[in-house]
Length: 216
Image (cartoon, rainbow, N blue to C red):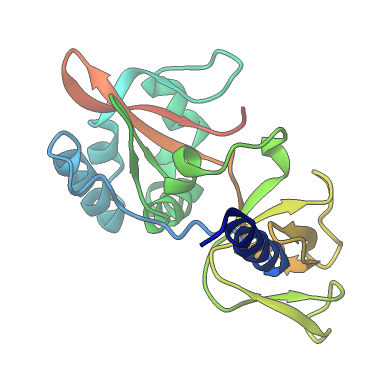
């Protein structure tokens, strides 16, 4: 085949590729921890403790200098106070932990994190505007109302909010999907990539919960 013909075929292929619509970026949760022998046992304990709402059992897995915010607060006593673990099963901590565990676990070289989103979110210049649609068959709508026209169906899509304070009074957020589609998604189906995460590290060679923190 002559060179000119080859170049023509390449040009056609590139043209077809450019004509295809961009695919949306998705991040369905995975659980990498159960397959890693360094973290499998403690992750199993966390799941069991969460089911039983066992505050004392959870605190036994927490590192002495656990980090709880970016203002320098740390320690088991501060952690228990902030999350009102003295309230037992009524503490809001358990609902947060339930949510985390459902969103998967990511493993890095010497640490692991719930949710999976925290470690695997795409790089962005503005992490505070990045969200994950937490589920499948979630509607993106033309306006912030449940009965408005459905623009797209989202399945664990990574989206960008118009602004950090873009939540409508009705609990909807104006977002853009990675393929450029724009619309409104109910805030209850969105989770920020810098929302609360639980990080498991090693303390004197033992896996322990070293961070339970939000922000960046």
